[in-house]
Image (cartoon, rainbow, N blue to C red):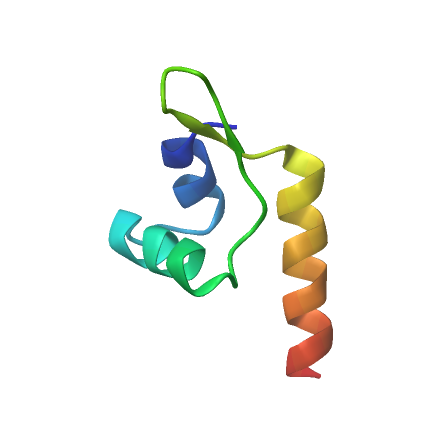
Length: 57
C-alpha cells in the first residue's frame, strides 16, 4: 500500500503523524523502494492495528 492508501485506511491520519510514528519506531513496518518511496504490506498494517487494539484493551 502507498502512504496515501495507508492514511485513508487509518481514517484520515495526517501524513505528519504517520512519519512521526516512523521516527518514534511505533508505526507499521514499511518497505523502502529504491526510488525512496515507502510501501506498507496490508498484512503488516493489519497486524500493527491488532497490536494497538490489544494494547488499548
